[in-house]
Amino acid sequence: MSSSHREAGHGPRAGLPVLIGLLGACYAVAATGAVASADAGSTYQGLDRPAWAPPAWLFGPVWTVLYATIAIAAWLFLRSQAAHTRPAMIFWAVQLAFNLAWTPLFFAAGQYGLAFADICLLLLVLAATLISFGMQRRSAALLLLPYTVWVVYAAALNLDLWLANT
Image: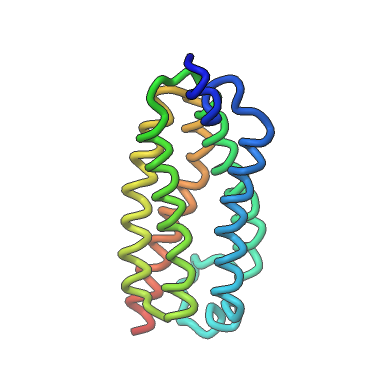
């Protein structure tokens, strides 16, 4: 492995500073979402929700855990001996960007249809991330499975809320 490859944070030398940076990126997305959804609780309570919608209090704890797994999955992938990490990490960054965009679209702008389009794109890029990670580091892909399941559930909920509240 070249030293420039190591310097970029790839391979076994992707240590604690890289993990902290990835966690920082994920929790920056969470913080931005929290700012964009300051009145999310009242907005969510005011929506016509299906019986299978989770209570508002559940979102915070679930996302706290999921953001950690998203970061750790990327870190494990970067620690693999993969020769070509860039495409997979681009997918990872793009899915995080779609994740970031969803909350302002849904809660701040009230654009339920655009939020649904965003979450569908998130799922596509997340699938590409899962496949890319899985080809090199199965444990990294497995860590993304709970996130994927939650996003599928959130997409179904988003669609239902959009159809029921417009």
